[in-house]
Length: 269
Image (cartoon, rainbow, N blue to C red):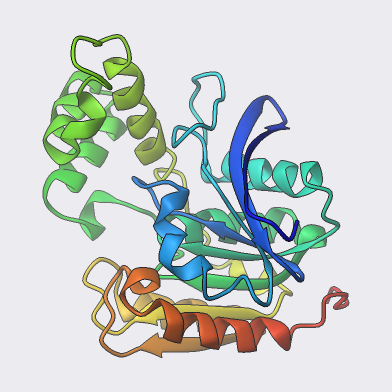
């Protein structure tokens, strides 16, 4: 997979949109909650000299297509496992940021046999609960917890108008589909909680966090480092929650050095 590719591959019960380019061991990047694989456009160019970099759209993002249904971060972790197998990789490095970091944690716990090095960026092991967030995100999560879909959809329309708007002028057919898809993604955060479980991760792990991250406290990153047995921390000065776009070259240099030191065939502890 040395050349850039934009394609579709069947993964379990769905079809996943992915892009792969570069050369070397596979490194799969997991995007955040509301954006798709385009999140990594600036970071990937600094990684592809050392890795076969794979980005993909998770459920309800981009051109990935699954039958509409409720799902969890564990289900998304299983989707990643299916993608790795569909692409013919025996194992892969995995980097997840923000919500993608939650999925990456679930993957490390459920599919250790497919994982080489692990990078967790701007993420937390704590539940994504209303008391940990503020404003419309808290409103949306509260509505989803109560099962109040009408209220949740109204809040989402304020948060992300593009999700609630038509794809093209005069085409309203996909408005509910886009809105419901984003609500399903927020809903997937409700059952997430890896506190007390990360000690089970045997993979070499790098926890990346911006020192100025206003969305996820630095203390959350340090908590993960303290629990994962083989974890180091990279705290980036001058970076907030979007570290992968704020200082992509600096972050990629450190990530490359870290992953190049991970034995590809490392023994499981």
